Amino acid sequence: MSLIKPRRALLIDLDNITYQDGSRVSAACLRGRLEAVLARTGPVDHVLAAGPPSTVARYLAELVELRVPVVTSTSRSRKADTVLIERAEHLISTGYTEIVLASACGRFSVLCGRAGVSVTIVCVAADAVARELRAGATEVLAVC
Image (tube, rainbow, N blue to C red; front, top):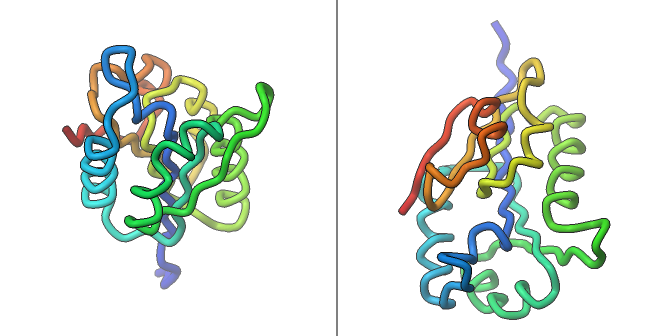
């Protein structure tokens, strides 16, 4: 019997969770969404949010208040999803076995189907999750 505790990470795609009906949500709305994501996710060993500079700047106060670490994606080739996928791959290589993604973007499907790793999607609208991500994820949870 293994006594090693599973290590969990929450990765938040700010661009993905800050839009509704084609427009950016208010800071108050994002705060509510982030609080719901954090509550639904439960205890984690690592948290990181990523987004382009303009998105991070717009919602920085809410991220700071909720103590969510954030990085900016600085170029077209290193968008938030790329930054978060790279972080997830690093975490998996260091022994993380549970990745929770606050995103509905299909690019994250590359993280699914790895032996010994579960990928849970926590999203605003379950019906908005990309088909390939939904098919590969261990679980899809809607928060709003």
